[in-house]
Image (tube, rainbow, N blue to C red; front, side, top):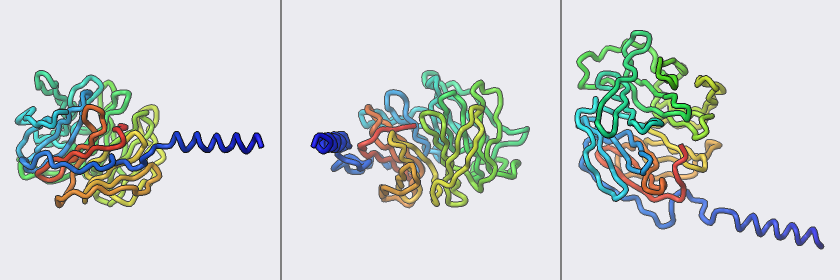
Length: 296
């Protein structure tokens, strides 16, 4: 009788501790179109306050969405920046593919430092997306997308690869060359796992991050590529193409957020509570309130 009562109490406790709403989307939340005043939006990245910086690449500018739902221009002539990410010192890293470079931008002064522009003396294809590990190391993808603003559109690196910049930023090393066209990239908060989307082969892979920053244990995560990516605190992975697709950490799709645009380019978490999903899609940006917070 005592055992029965104990098991019953344990069962009640488990039920009480379970989340009331397992959906990643907040109950009754509606997708909000914030603005459609752009040409092609990309690269959203949130600062510590929850403001989201994003790019309008054809117009060569970086914009800032604040937690009051307002948008302002942060920087003009931004090197045709694409993917963005904040480093551990609060500087904005930008995949500035006008000259095939990776930039570090001081938020206060807009002073630019070029972190990398070639590999072994060969011009990069065009840095596209990036993630900063907890140790300060920088992972970035380098696919080739021929840009009409390039003076020299020649491809000097045959393969389209993933690179890692050492935490001291002394050099970049090649860490993955067995992909077709890497694009979206994101890692886990503990710095142990990296996800890379091979948009050229419609696949996303999961890797173990070694102590030296190299990768091991390459595993197929799902049969879907992605432009941009993010993670939430539950370990769910968000992929973008025809809307936003959410996969649990087993690679099972659990949600699809439809976007009324031909293409959804990127996604991140921001807002004052880090629970606003910020989505870039074609000429527009959208927000959606979530039950989860960002987990990258």
